[in-house]
Image 1 (cartoon, rainbow, N blue to C red):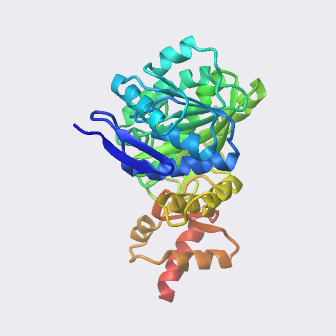
Image 2: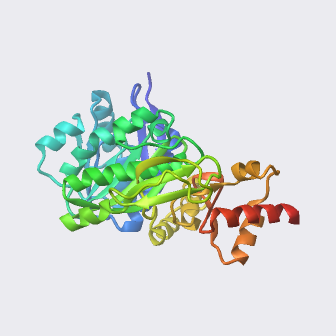
Image 3: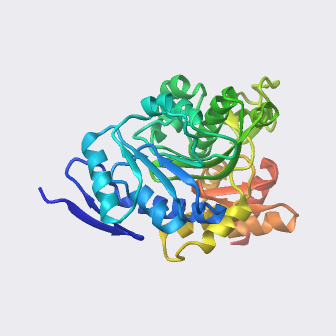
Length: 366
């Protein structure tokens, strides 16, 4: 079978039969290139732990100025395909047919940037990437086991991430906060603190962009950004309890009903807005990646959100426009934004009672 030829960004590659390539992930590759340019990655060393065709590494080299490029893949055909594409793009790099575990066990090299985009969960590989990290290492980490992180397979989430998930409209945000918390716990075992830079949950994947900082205090400080959440199925409010062993009440603070507890989760800010703004300047405004990062820039960076259709059903009323509800709350001094996690969601610092009142008033004004 003739190889498929692909041109994406500055890369021109051939996709051999049986080698994985997902054209729909161009959006994420665009975002990753923009991220590397926004942080100033020129001249840095980078390892792609799951290279497949090599397209990510090639684009990083040609578009973000990576100088020391190493690409790994356990599939012999993929490793050969990567090597062929490196030659096609006139790039000198290291391409190895080896799995990450064996590479990390036998290598003394540390990398400035690590990209891990496995099939399914990244959890089995996190300890290995930490072995080849150093102070300041940037980690780009993808999870595609979103059904697990979002609670469709709750037992698997407990087993894989040692965390109880949510399986409702909050599931994507809860899932990405579970993933961050898991990574922080593993990093702390290697005496690394974790600085979260950008996080994305889209389609079938979650993607984290993180910076590691060496030191016991930094590891401790990161762990103290984790905690637990509680969700009320009666009034649909939520609360968060920070800490490793916080005092957790199973009673809703708003209505007194029993709540569902979830976590441990990360409770800090999900995105560095200044960095996200720099990324936008590196991106094509017509691209899907631009829309994703633009949404991140506009979102109120507090844990979790309310789902307007769920609240209107509670009030036994028809739907109300987001902008009407937000205008009423903003007139009272509250902050309101949309959320990148759900197109019908609203992030606000207003208490649930104020939000319900605003929905009722918005309905009257229509």
